Length: 437
Ligand code: EPZ
Image 1 (cartoon, rainbow, N blue to C red):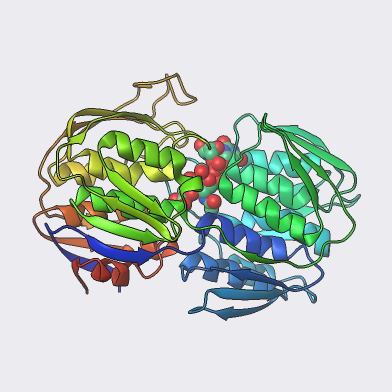
Image 2: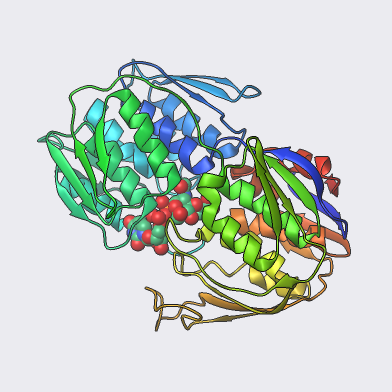
């Protein structure tokens, strides 16, 4: 199943459920490796990123039991052992999660071999912050022909770090290393995304001592031993917002069971400014097209509590249906507008610019990155043959195909499984006419 035929032009309508957040679940699974007792994680989605992390943990002797339907995963790390480099290498290019195994593996085994990383090509996505943090803890980093080897001949020691940018992954790297390092660690300019707060909750359940200040400072007191945890993953706010954008772009009405207001405040404000309607209850959020014209907006992506970069791509498709000029300034990734080429082929009017438009100067200003977009609408979309470029861009293409008149062919949809569980079944439940080839 790698190609989807989408017969577009009808509104999505009905109910779907989102389960645990991809960008939390994989990290919580890594955290289980730090414990000396088994852990249980609930609300696990059936996505391929979970399989990648399960595979890596199993290679290191973790016993993984999974109830896919029930969304429960049990991880027993009591017999952690070193894995063969060749086996680890088979995971090269599959995800960015392996870099987060460094601290836990060094604590448990004295060394960590990390394969070359994968993940979406939406920018250079360097790991300099990660390696700098590990070195500050006292780790030695050796680059090998494939991957990197991390060792800590004199152990890992608490340290003071200030991030140049509040990176999600680097903050997680620090947390997963500091909890068992000797002494105190302080991180300034930390990322404070809800997924990170949930990771901190998991680590606290395991026995860690972590405080978070309002000025983005995280302090960790290292402990000698961590136990296991039982935890229910927070819902996937990126998937929820993707379905919300799909409802808007197709003039539909979708109830997203599991969506949680608290994690989506900024998205909901923007959705309302575009003209989208929503109703919130204890079980989820219903997202609706208002039946009248949508409004153009000025939008800037940012770290939490700003508008997430991962919400940008799906919403841009809805903005092609809004009246007037929308300006979108992407400040988290330098190359996250590649997906707009396909939208333009489908009839959208989108121009991308090197300049920082509509907001403050960001890290990518005065450089060669097309990181601002002007979307002029509304423009009817027409069907096309599309190749999925990355996870969120791919889902956005699906939304465009659903909104477009005619039959589109979307190739490479396997990539979308990384972050959207059972998306073809969910599309069918919402009345979409899709066929896998
Ligand atoms: C996480 O990526 C998510 N991935 C991303 O989701 C998400 O877009 C991103 O956080 C921001 O919210 C996972 O959780 C697996 P960063 P991460 O470190 O941790 C630069 C999705 O579609 N940077 O916060 O890799 C980096 O290049 C994915 O679900 C460095 O320069 O993101 C980027 O410009 C895509 N050096 C910025 O920081 C480093 O060492 C933010 O990246 C690390 C990062």
